[in-house]
Amino acid sequence: MLVKTRRTLIQLVAAMCLSLSAVIVHAKTELTMYYPVAVGGPLTKIVDGLVADFMKENPDIDVKAIYAGNYNDARVKALAALNAGQPAQLSVMFSIDIYELIEQDAIV
Image 1: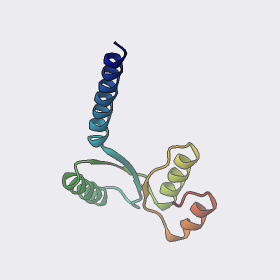
Image 2 (image 1 turned 180 degrees about the vertical axis):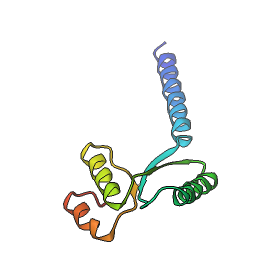
Image 3 (image 1 turned 45 degrees about the vertical axis):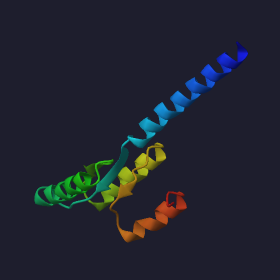
């Protein structure tokens, strides 16, 4: 009886592991990207088009492109998200902003 119970338990654990691995394999990677444009309009459409093309070629990755205003607005939003514990994975910023990101241990 003990052998049968042990075998059933092992089969149950194996089935659970297989189920979890299927979920992990099919999970989408979600990325947030802040980007600045001095003026909205056609440039935001170009960025949205580039993101859509990228996601079409990479169906496992979902990019949420967020128009963040000008470069300063994008920096402020990126740092606020970082300080809130929900950092964006991508952000278009001025090169000088790297020093502030280094000071906040945001560069990986």
